[in-house]
Length: 185
Image (cartoon, rainbow, N blue to C red):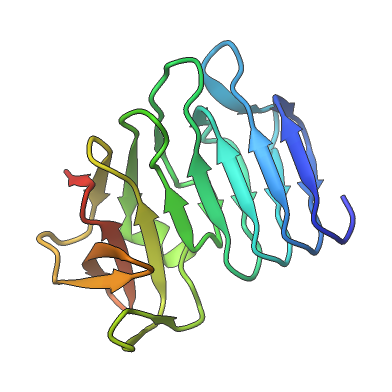
């Protein structure tokens, strides 16, 4: 794609997609097998600079590589066909927010290395005016679930950000903020 605010919707992707600069949206629709399919080899989506959004309506194939690029990028779960989404995020990098809200009970597994690859390098300022560095935000609602892998529970504290309350999990020098409505496993 080029510079500018682009929208692209894909069913199957082979090779590399470079979205370029701009606030881009990529919609990854599911195939009949229930996967957002990035075909053979090492299929890649590079979102580039800008506040980008990648929307998926299915489990992401773990052979994929999705790079949010710079600025503030969001991975959104969008439910279609009455199917909940359950996926790891080991194939994504440089996303600052994961939104699993959808219309069904979605779930995601997050490890300390996932937080290391995906966090806001700029300071995130909570409702009290306190700056937090290296934050990955997970939004969701009641019924959604986050499974923590290699991340200590319980939460170390809570913060309020953009009107939502988040449980804070520390992963070394990074923080994982999980919406307080989400069930933690």
